[in-house]
Amino acid sequence: MSMQDPISDMFTRIRNAGQRCHPEVLVPASKHKKAILQVLLEEGYIGNVKDEEHEEKPFVRVQLKYFNGKPVIAKLKRESRPALRRYAGKDGMPRVLGGLGCLIVSTSKGVMTDKKARELGVGGEVIGSVE
View (cartoon, rainbow, N blue to C red):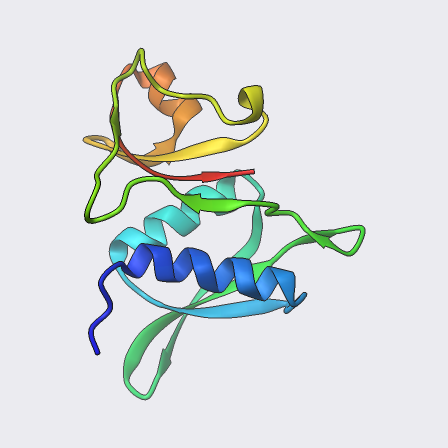
């Protein structure tokens, strides 16, 4: 069976592993997923990202972070999906938790947070939100 939305699958794997307090989770690799994970790493939501191969297929091992026994990522939600793409311009970029959370945005200048997209004055596809 083919996977229809690999980014949603990655978000679900991270959410489920966090709820079960797993120290790390294994995710099938792609350039787009690695770019999203790099944004999460830079923002401090995950601990470390490491490339691996299992059965000759590329995977990424994601180290999860916890604070006082609870996962740092409280909510990880897919905003844009294959059936309904969501785009936001530089002026219409929504805020998550009044600026405490972040949006992951795919722009013409790469994958970045909503704050960085506002600074650069670019809009793009809103991939997901993190709280």
